[in-house]
Image 1: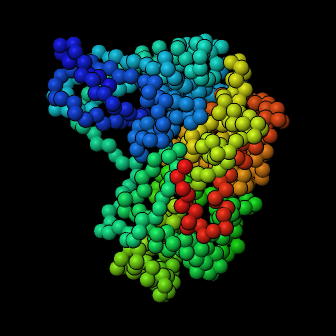
Image 2: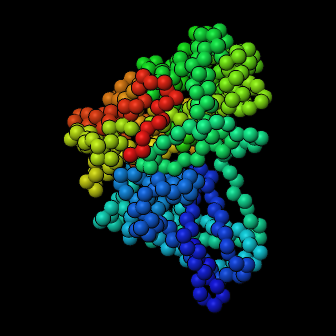
Image 3: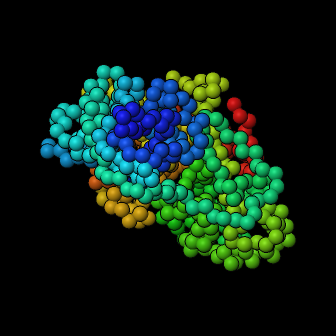
Length: 525
């Protein structure tokens, strides 16, 4: 970012990056240190120089604009960031795919925007910028295609880059400085857990993470949480625990069951989600209706279809157990057993379940080697599907890119032509109809059946769905909507290669028979 002074010279900020995501409401950024004066224009670059673009994204602190879980635009093994992503639906006169996914990335595709506008910042302020999407998309040639890749020789990327540079305007300037609203609520506490910190050893290949400042896992707290996770006395009839539907040997899912059965024999309506790498999540359940892990863990305990207990009864049971009273006191100090502390102890335990040691990870470290079939599957996984440009991949990485193998978002993946509410039930937004959490593909070979409703029993069925079973709908993910209605028509050998690669993502540590509370103590590579 640069601001032009009255004498024509430029005030360069240097080292400042921001990330804007219209679909998620990330539409503001804060720039400190601007002197109070009147400027005559501003200039900013969309994109990164080669050094920043090729730097390890996992070294950025959590919350930084270039952190993978903030921008969701670093495609891991492809190398580098996507500078701008325009994705959506379009109406075609003669039918065909109605999705588009235009991405600009790579050396030579940085965009420089210069706007002439008096900017009175004598007392600070907020500069409003508008981006005219129609100006970028209108008038594209019929054969322009549904996607760009910013690869060498992709002439469409250059055409879009020029359009983007001309699509910004200054919409106004306000004398108010708007504060950044935190994305997650912080709960003030008079004390934090006591004891030896849990040895969270997380590979540098995973994005940086920030643990809750008021509930950093400690050894005694993690052990307490592990015991509570297996405690059947928390259910209405003392027959079911959290572990009943989250089996460690199946990456903490309910193996082979489309829907789990509750303590009183009632059948649920959602497939039990795996429980690992939760420290990187900010929304929980398939529809993201809960923001904090400590709150999420208390929902199944009270749900009539699941454990059907109550917080009052749980506190009473635990308070009547001398061992639990002592353990809660060790971790949280005076105050006894409370519902809040029950949630905090379970949160501590679940935060330690880190999955990072699959065959794929070992291959990245040079300690193992993918088979030719697995390597072919990886190539398909990270390659777009665009036959006119001789690209015939499976296009998986848009939603499952990076070393977390999830963009941490919500997506309509075309299960139904008239999808159920899904995420829309939480946000109230029509654009979220049919969207559910994009799960990590780590340990996916252990977590059958698949999808939010467990409709697919095998990985082969899942791949067939994405190959030729996607149903179009107004909220279908654009990266699927851009594919032809007939599907990808992947050869059987390629489908087999994808399955082989997905199986290489199984973590040998996770189904280990040791106590679950020690799983995350993995030596750093």
